[in-house]
Image (cartoon, rainbow, N blue to C red):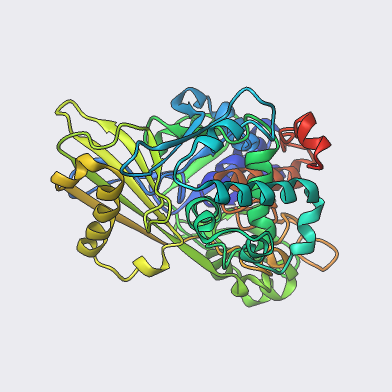
Length: 461
């Protein structure tokens, strides 16, 4: 009765399996690919034989459940923390945002005022909008439900330069949609909880190993309680007897289970569910109304170092971020460029992609202008995340069936479920923990970073 089939070996599926194992259940993780991690993993580039990450994934101090997940896997030491964020501003040196000695929400005041990429007028406008975000509190986001974040920026009279150089890079990177498209409360959450609530919330952690290596311990942990990780096993359907799910039909036969956790994207889940099951469970009826947004990652190798900083934001450029992946023994530097909300890039071939990204790198990194990369590898994730447009929150299902009807032992997980978070690794872990809790009746979610005293006095919370 404690055997649980988990469809999908991404972060949500692994997180659910860990929590089930700890509670004495027997999770059976079914993953089509030959590796764990889902969209937040690595692959071997057939051209070079190198291990490359699908895309750059970032943890932040406010990602308390993701950090708990890494702790349970025993891989926190493989993360490197950065308290500074570098913003390109040629021909000057990059601007730096770092937390100072003041308490939240004022911790960035000093470094923000010293940034040269935006004018004093821009800074005043940004400060006014931040003040409005504090005063409305978390509950105040709800009155913006159904509107886009650009409406808020326009209402607070943000300058064009402030939008292009400050608001837009943060929103697109966090939500994978532009301010003109993203649901306003989702973007507001990013600034309220990632910038204003706590000094540690905005600290950024990057993996110093390929993402795939972060999941190495998972199989052994799951096996301790008799569970299994079945790689290369493709789920073909969720078995349903008209009242309850009974397991998962795979290319290797039926995996019987007392409960099934679906930890795959919503479009994949829809294909696994028969029309009878879809009609029985109200949570499945809106899946075809959900949409996605793409991300493009571009790996480039230069024969000499061109970027000194560990990362860099490229404000008002098509390429939003550069990540320094290190210098090899021959002195070659690996740069990982990231373009979020990359709809306009999906039909481009690799030569066009390389040309456009190089144009942005040359702008941000003067030493790159005299060099051509010796290697370029683009990775398109056409359905990388859900599109958090207005109205999306109403479509997000919870882990377990509710009063609207559903199948009790079919549990849903994935960052697209009702986590309250954007499409992030934190959201994926939250959904996995919640899915496990729906079975174990435990409370696995970690307590949020508490808003600092000054932030609470200002209205945040």
